[in-house]
Image 1: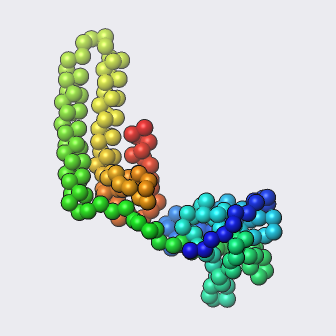
Image 2: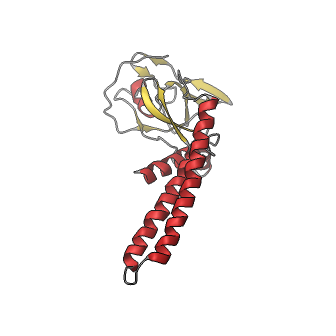
Image 3: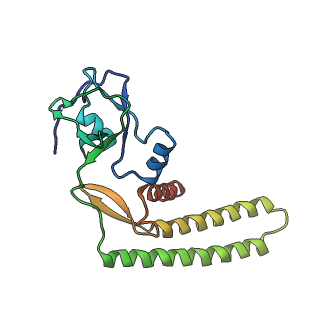
Length: 208
């Protein structure tokens, strides 16, 4: 792993970078000439790039390379950061070399099966109970109480949506390098990162 001393970021110049193994989102952006994700990586006053600055965007970053003459050029690194490449930083697309994480959160298969069963049970129970409540609200609400009827409907529908997204995500709490995190065990666990992130973010927003 490369180590570097933090540098004082004084320049307003920025470097375009993108994730290794372009995701669907960055691939579409590159085809349409849109700015890449995480485009704001600042250079220092002496035209170097601090490894700490790069790791603010890519936590496991350990190197940079860019395409040139049909191959790749790797940017040299010292304790003060990445040196300016020949010809300057320019308008190049830089690939970030990322070290694999020390520990990838993964629950044992029996635990994944138990969580899948529990989330399925919660979904079925939520559908049954809320359907019953909706029927009772519709048949038992007194005349003149329509506004309260609508509020109760909204509460039931929101509970149904949360139950559905919990089944989609199937969250499993685990520990990653001392930090508490949540692993997805649901339908989209093998999807690409942008899709999984969108699903997980939707679930978090609903829970909040």
